[in-house]
Image (cartoon, rainbow, N blue to C red; front, side, top):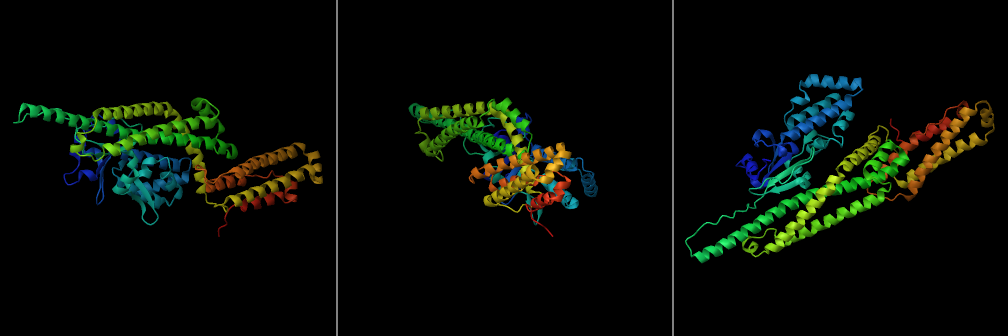
Length: 490
């Protein structure tokens, strides 16, 4: 691995303050054995900050953009024609783009030329992580590149400090990225220079010099492992949070059927190997909190004994205590690596499943029809109104004189429509029961989310057609109820 402090330092301009320069690296460049050169980077500057962006990340953005356009045009001839017309006018393909400015201009042109909100939504889909990191949607100015300062703030959780003489201590996974800033701590140097003093003074100085450098070396190693631990504990938190979300989604999917239930069951059998997700997640969260508490204790030790300490005080630090803390942080890092490795496949599967479910709710939110109800009281009232409507339909089919006659002549059709209405009622009853116990503090699904999903389910009721249904006005009542769920325009 050739990502060294000195290699990065050579890349930055002499006019740039080291403290204001960052290097945004991808797994591709970190894993490369080639020498780092300036043409490997796209440079983004603002008044105070400068970021050297690995061009492999630019390639990732182009790949996401291409996938978004392909998804927008797939099986839609009109969309394909609009995109082709726009491409002919701009006379440039996605593969030709070589900088963030060119990507920004291309996206602005395509969105404006096609005048397509769905295309913009495809481009800024949550799965397009690189696009959403670097580009912003501005109502007045269109698509804009995030400033260097804004990027540094957004990626602060992916930042590591690299000290003099050091190289990156680990590799990234997949399409992940990392921000590297250059630290000030010097690397250890155990060479002892002779001086003109007495041999005794020389030995004393040599001992102190060696002790000082040894302590600095331990501190430097501590900082590298601590940065690594901090970054990985965040990943562990994300996996635990995603797993708890998956538990909630299993419950919600039983109510709303947004995704194939077999997907959830297969993940449970293959990766959780248990039916009780709550017990699994409680253990996972507990383990995550334990390592996080260790991390906080090590940070407290660092802030109290090491941070911003000068050479005069460093020499008085207890080496045995420092080495013990270094072993402790290494132990936590090794433990965390094992846990993350064992959860890697699970994490990928539940993330895909969670995204499928969330994309469904996102589609509901972006639908042209806007729902009327946005409070729990209103949504409960509308759910009860739906149940009352279904009760009337079912009761009339079971006891109405004309329906009894209808059943004599068309028993199969009568039974099918009755079973369908009862099935609708059972599903709405489940939703009603959930709404009764829903707590607003639920961190995974807000009231707005619940309202969207409930209205979606209520609006899917399709009254079984029959001439008696028209005669009693039941079909009309059903349509009027569905229309009442949405705002009217015009």
